[in-house]
Structures are given as C-alpha cells and as structure tokens.
Length: 72
Image (cartoon, rainbow, N blue to C red; front, side):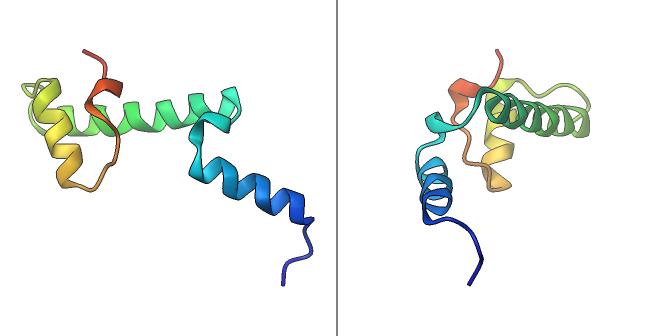
C-alpha cells in the first residue's frame, strides 16, 4: 500500500472522473497534447485533411476528444 493520505487519493480519483476539477495548468497541458496530435494527423495526410477527417482519424486511433474541441 502506498503511504499517501486518503484525501489525496480521493481527490485524484475525483479529478479523473470529472476533468472540470483539474487545475487551469492541467487543462492547458491537456489542450497542448491534443494540438500536437492534431498537427501530427494533419501533417501525415499532406495538410489536406479538414476538421472532420482529422477528428475521424483521431477517433480511429482511440482518442476520446469530442469534435467540438478541435479548432475549426
């Protein structure tokens, strides 16, 4: 068993269940990771994919981000 306070554990679990409880910095970091994935898919497809095709490709790869979070 890990030597951590029960409140720390429960706070961590709550943030995983409800991402709106994350700090502003954690939310920005998550958004930057998504931008990197979008750029990777866009570049891999010769810069011709639009938002719908990029989103569809990310879904095929297992991403759970909603299409509304992709920049239009």
